[in-house]
Each structure stands twice: as C-alpha cells, then as structure tokens.
Image (cartoon, one colour):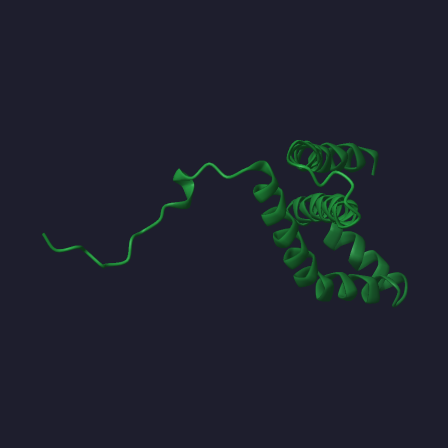
Length: 124
C-alpha cells in the first residue's frame, strides 16, 4: 500500500484548545484591532477639538448605533488586552506561571474582560 502524502485539511473547530491558548489569541487579536482603530480615533479626536461644529459632528457620529457597538467592542478589546498584558507581565516574573495558576489566570482574564466592559459600558 502506498502512503498518501497530500496535505491534510485541519478543521480548527474540531480541536479543543486550552483556555490559555484562547486567551492568548484574544490578546493578539485585540492588539491588532486596537492598532487598526488608531487612525479613526485620532480623526474623531481631531474633529472634536476643531471647534463647536466639529464637536457637534463628533457627537452625531458617536450617536450611531453601529458606532456604539464598535465602541463597546473597542472597550472590551482594550480591557482584554490590558488584563492579558498584566497576566503576561506576572508570568515574566514567574508569578502564576504554573499549569494550574496559568489556567486560572487565563480563565479570569477571559471572564473579567467582557464583564468589566459591560459594567463600564453601562456606567458611561
């Protein structure tokens, strides 16, 4: 029998990734997302400080439902990136670097970021 050397399609949805891997991918994705948002946020800041008309226009833009959803996702992304970054700093100092502690801190970041985003979102 001949062996088949063709590439194998790997369906990533069939794998069960550890929570630390999911949190790490979220950290990277949130960093990319935040980097891509910088030009738009700088534009809004520039527009809002250009005068009363620019400030009124900025408020109009921010009143859109899709923009509010994007701002909520931005808030979650910022909180997730911050909490995961703090987690990685602790791991760099060998605090919580064990298997169980790493799993618990990854779970804490994954749960805390959306909860804090919801809390801060309602507060704003």
